Length: 409
Image 1 (cartoon, rainbow, N blue to C red):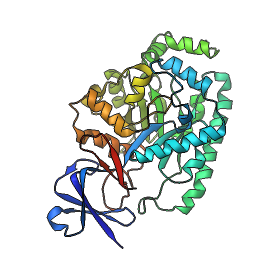
Image 2: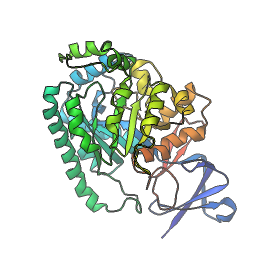
Image 3: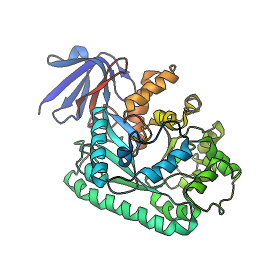
Image 4: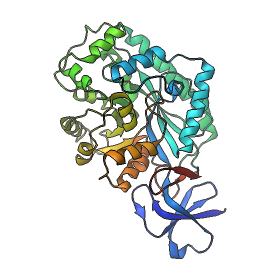
């Protein structure tokens, strides 16, 4: 077997920078070792920039790629959601072409794995090609209790299609940890958001959280908490726009997160997405709910996913990054969709964070984008870090983070 010896101005291993080191990978891109530079011998490839494991996009809506540029910036969440629901139609050919183009964009941007929201099976043919690793979040939504049965059955049908459609590929690619082949069978049924899932629907989907990764859109607008605390705010207008009867809703007198979070307790990992208006009391609540709930490692591990460019695109706002850091939250990064972002680039998400929060060390930011993201999606056994036996991809970032290119995929 042949090996490549690679070094650069800096090497980030998924956790920290390694000094005077050489990364050794086999011909398949599987990590073999780190060597001190003086012991690496001849044939070392040297790059100008930062070598890093491939980037992890923990939140995306690949199926909305055909909506790029269709929704104006700054609409606010309610009008954005309404436009997605009412203007997402297109021909299947247009949608499939946009999906393929968007996936290629992510690959070119150094992304190796994606947590992808699915409301249909249109992304499945592209995913079966095995270009990227995916965790498929089959989204269940339905605010009217009367339609909960139909909405659950629809989500279950899509779930079954992904599991069976990807199972055949998994049989051909039997080992992901040792060989780094694309893992495609990770699939969960998840709630869209607390304001779009009725109590009946929650009860139907909760058994599908067991030992799974579960994501949910969380506190993306300030009106979300108002709706749960008081039953008022802009969500009432959204239900009127959609002609949905909201009379069954009873305010909880608690924040949105505190109103639903314990419903996720069966999950192995929880990804709270956006968190634009999450408060410190909510973070404390999450910590209480996931401490000593079950023995040993059973309490679900919670990750807070930042999609800062989408937050700016929709709400012209940023999440409380410093508060989340101060409280020791597990942070990961996502891009959201091309309906709510200018592109699908984790590097651009990092650039926006650095611009607005320059005090965050680059090492920490890269950890969110690599090893933390792999842990959140349950893929840290083979992605996210340069550790022996893993095939995380090797990318090269410019020192000023202006560009990325792939060294090994």
